[in-house]
Image (cartoon, rainbow, N blue to C red; front, side):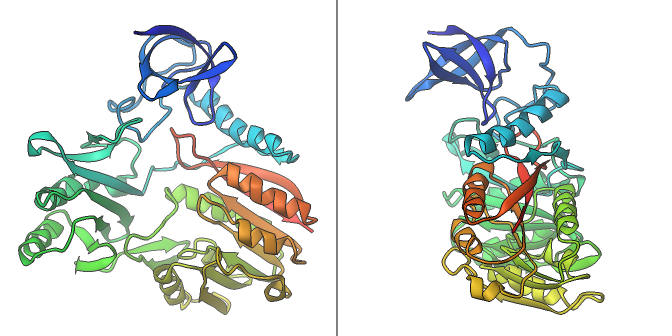
Length: 411
């Protein structure tokens, strides 16, 4: 059975929200003010599947991708840009208000740029041994076969074709695959996960496919399978060897925007601690004017950063492998630090912020990809005596509810 619903607003996860008898009902791919027809979703009494839009909003636009609504990669392609951007900024505003954090929230910065420079493609063997290569379906465990994606950086041209070609000989072993593809200066860098041990016949075929699709490197669970040329990226003007399966900011424009905001807020600092530093998107840019101490738990990222510090124009840099969740820097280690920059994974930096709150570091710059965990961590710093002046939201995950932000704390 279906039912008619009037959508009140778009929620923080991108679903339209209808209110019935005081309870929220979530309908994906809908907008505020629309009348829609929804069908029950088994096991989810508060959700409905969109059947049709009976009365569309004047703000509704045509999605740019033919897979939208089926593929789970994008939640919002159907909303005009200005209203979408206002909604995304409001996610930050409302989350901070709910946490009792009062500060200025700057206008949203669009950092989609040329598009995504890294993707993870899933390959599964479906019924009748049909191979599916693509992205997870919206709200399901199924895979939507994809041969092109309009939100990818042109540097990833050929990535989906390569993923299909690599999956075919490996998926026949009956194991699901995840294929991460990153755009390097020299071509595509591919890491395959879930294939099981590779046999000699696999290596021979994969070598041919790597040549055919001009892959820079192919690894399995981070272990080398073959390399045509060492893949690198550029951070500013500095070439950095890319670790297999490495984390990168989703877009080049996103990295550059976040780094510019961080650099501006740290402009007067002479000694900076860069926590959760990765391959150095902040450290290498800050290192031209300040002495940097950089920490991360990923040994590959730390090795790549150490190698990159041989570039001319950088001040001496201290770089260490350290699990900041288990062994956060303590106040005694921060006594001579002018500024701390931290950019943790989505779970935030609770343990580290508890130590920062006890320190006397005069300036902290927080970068976050999860406003909820940021609000939790910010509350720790505020309760420890810091003040927050401004939060700047950054949108490098266009068409999704994910939003980055940069915030500055002072003591």
